[in-house]
Amino acid sequence: MEPKYIIKICLLGEANVGKTSLVYRFIENKFRENYKSTLGVNLLKKDIAIEGYGDVSAQIWDLGGQESFKSLRKLYLEGANGALLVYDMTSKKTYEKLDEWIQSFRDARDNAPIILIGNKSDLEKQIKITERQSREYANTNNLGMIITSAKTGQNVEDAFTELTKRILDQISNNP
Image 1 (tube, rainbow, N blue to C red):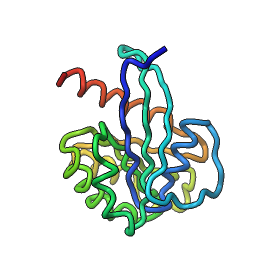
Image 2: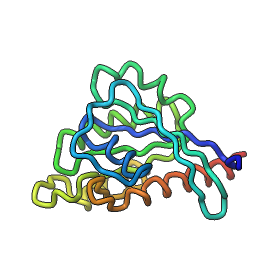
Image 3: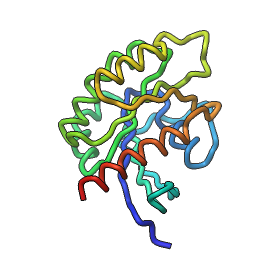
Image 4: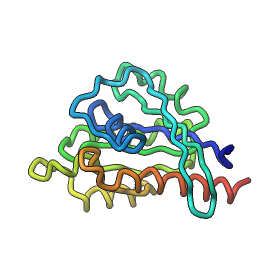
């Protein structure tokens, strides 16, 4: 059966925040301790059913977070319907780079929805960025916000589903 909607979701964030782990947890419900760093972009797809909308084919673009791929970002973001912006809750550096990622995305996709993902919530003793800080940041920047753990699977499905709903709401309000 043909999906009713085909959407493009980009995963944004610095290297080693867990973008690839989140995607594989979402698609295959599996977690591996170590992935090779994504070079450039990794393309994946998952068909999902969204209540009120029907079947959706989500094309997921997992962008490499290294500085060396910064020049390619605009190209990869072309046509994106929304983004999951991921930072590592145990790393202040990945949190401090969020503004840069938001700017890149907004420059390319204007007001497409973004959900901020605080990943690695399972590493409780190492957390440096609190959920409250994340929520304040998300509110200030008009983003959704979800805390996840690719390792345990906490909220991973919810993050992709929530972004997909926001994208479809936006599409149906601006046909």
